[in-house]
Length: 575
Length: 58
Image (spheres, chains in turn brown, purple):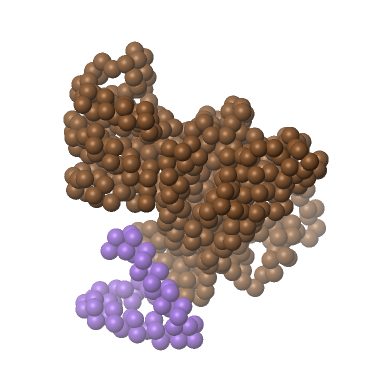
């Protein structure tokens, strides 16, 4: 085992192998110091959540302005793990290929206690899945790829760099915003304001909302290093390793031969001292030696992390909405930060689009708050459990963890406690029973109202053309009715629904055939294997009504036109 | 006991032990062991568990 060697020259830092484009500040058309006109939606923050929200709104034809204080995408060690659910969302936003081309997919990981492997875990995955359960990708790529997608929505997304919000005055009709740029200062008006401006959100403060919950004392050093290694992509954790006795170390491989190394500080360590390179480098050196890594390596970035488990009680205050880290701070263990932010953006975009266009009452936005606050509480509860294990808050958690780890070498049954409990898609509460007009037990299987769709392979038809695909690829930005049938769609359903859609909100009906396809002009699917029908407990005439964010709104065997209208009116005019 | 139940009971135990305080933790654990004897109610199994829990080899 090596420790620090005072005669050894210190390692030089190298930059990330990524050059961020610098964007100039730009002033809009002004009269005096006032921007003319009123924006429908103004987003503060061009991080992953702000950009995902702007792209989601653009999918529904709603234009937005995005104000970003910085002049480029982010730098430094931030989010790196993007979940399958986030990738599904990113697909709907039109940015998936770039994420899959650059990101490193992984399926599971291993944990060690001293010299012994005590856990080998796999995230749910099988060959029927279109997307990996997780990819590792640097946040600057995440932001850049979303930005590239924004450029294809010309006229709908106006990103203003180096535009710092200095004051916000919310009122009943929206908000007035004071914007500082290097080219000058101006005031603008918006009908709706979305705070995607991170942990120190100014929108949150202006809305008068406060984060509540727990902050943990345990501190982690987070470092990114450049290292060439042929190791597979997986989550690696060491508890009390010989390289750093008493510490906990996590490692993740990132694209471009970058590795993320997190390690826990002892309670008696001074954090300021601990992040100094001459303290960090020997610890990493020692660990890489223990792993048998012989290649030369260089530090890129070192920062300090302290776990927080905080959320607002509501994410809407009048015409201000909060999303991502501005709304909640979840511990890093279990990777729920950026991933829950993508789910926020995806939940919010379609609802705000319908409200802005007058197709839904503004109470629909209260469901954004209710659903995502509940999801945040679930994320926090799972994140807190992971944090209590990864960073024991006191002697009791510390003793029990040591006991669990030492028993886990021999006892399989205890290993689930070590499992990092990675993020999963949120499930929302479905409509109340009277809205569904059916017993909850009508279906034996398949995603219940509120749950996200289960993606499964099928043949996708568009007119005469067909291709192998997956169910979620049949979704479009509006509502979708998945209708299981052997034949043509019944006219008794399609005609009144088309009429209702014309007057209210479009609902696209997509027939799902089993084994063989009956003729149909529009998009449809054929479930060659019958697995999809089974997984959805479908019969001829079963229907799943899908929200624009891919969550099930309602489902019925033998759906009628009235069932569907009833559920649609409930969601659009929520009281 | 499934994984989620183990998770919950583990958390409950840790929180109770925290509340008991470090000074009182040893008597708490000793009492817990005795109560477990009674529930297990099998001398051979208890003896095997005592062996199993015995000092960790460093």
